[in-house]
Image (cartoon, rainbow, N blue to C red; front, top):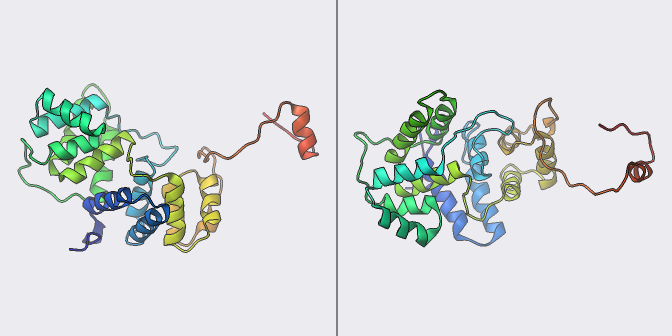
Amino acid sequence: MDPLDSSDGSFLFRNFADVCERIKATSKKLEKVRILSSYLQTLDRDTLPIVSRFLSGIIFQKGSKKEVYIGYSTLIDLIFEISGIDQRGFEATYLKYGDLGSTAEELFDKKALLPVIKRELKLIDVYQEFEKMASITGKRAVEGRKSILRGLLLDASPAEAKYLIKILTGELRIGLTEGLVEEAIAKAFNYEIKEIKKAQLVIGDVGTTALLAFERRIHEAKLKLMQPLSYMLADTMSSATEIEQYYKKELYAE
């Protein structure tokens, strides 16, 4: 089966995990961009922003107040519970990789717990479950989030579990930066990289930038109130006088 096959027009999370593994397997920057740009071209307007953010180390749009709030202790508890491993076995596996996602991948090869009915995870499913976790508040919030994540990990293959955990910890570790994601967006949708970078500077969210590129609306990127911007390069000046002399015009500053 083609690793980029989809089901009912909704794309599978295992495809995402497969692409991450292929990107990780090469040290060549141009090859990483080629693999990713080809993948981005297979996505639709719903899944493209999700993937672009996941690959940039974030889950929700920048400026959003949403936060999943899943800590390492919860992740480790679930790895113990689902794998059935003991403390010594977990520590030995973690020391081998130094990475919680890779640890889960090996330990989930033989799960002690299995779902009654296993579902095939789709990108939309994963994102919506993350949204549910972010929406839970109150005294039982920790257990509620843990229950949702338990369901995801039970349904996940070892490779999918690896990347679910990597996304939640913000540590993909596949040799991919947001800059390379921007290059892949440019290549996928036939834009100059400077157009994508310019849009990203004012939008500040790689998922929105990717969607505008997909819809051929990158020229519509503009500043919005209360919308965070990307970091911009700056020069250091020692005084207000130096700044005034540099611009040689009337300035207002806060």
